[in-house]
Length: 258
Image (cartoon, rainbow, N blue to C red; front, side):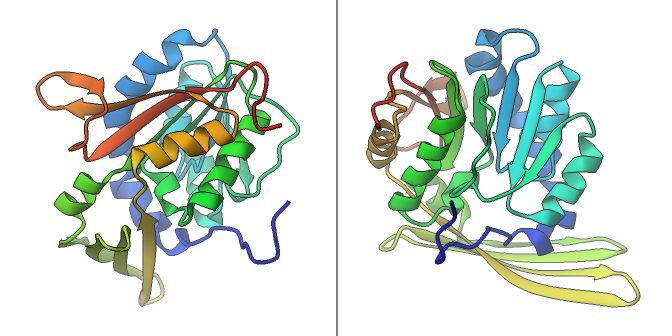
């Protein structure tokens, strides 16, 4: 159940339109080969997959086209509005990763595009992992990625803009190493009965890999493999200078969190 101090994560609502057009397809194309290699090849035909923090549904669309039964979950109602258009064969749930309860179980759970970096404390991240464990079948895989320290140092101290006839997006990113927090400040304007402007900020937390692995073990997901992409060698075991980490873990047949 959601605690009184925890509200549903809806911060992506004002960003949904731009995200759907400029981010969802791009990252899906880049991460799908890794997902296929590490997860999909081990799943039975027609397996059920929970896409946690599913965004605007591009990965759900790709997976349903391959015959998987996909349920997408996200805290942003606006992101889900696009997801339902992009992946009409998937099911979608408006809920928070930190507090969701689903009566069914899944063959696999995925959470992609550094979605879990938006969980700002290790305690809450552990709660997310417990929630995943509760809906994952025994020995089922949980696959997710996180931005790492090197990645924040490389790409989160910059600004850029997207200018189109009917919308404008200006982004300023920053990272505070001492606090291990990143900030994505954006101004979005779109043309609808005149120009409409929205200013918002998205926050992320950088978690060292050992902390993530320990939290997974606490939640009953203790069999963990971690990877990163090397521009020459492809997918390799996680290194300290990786900008993005990919974690693959499994629910123990006996839940160690009980």
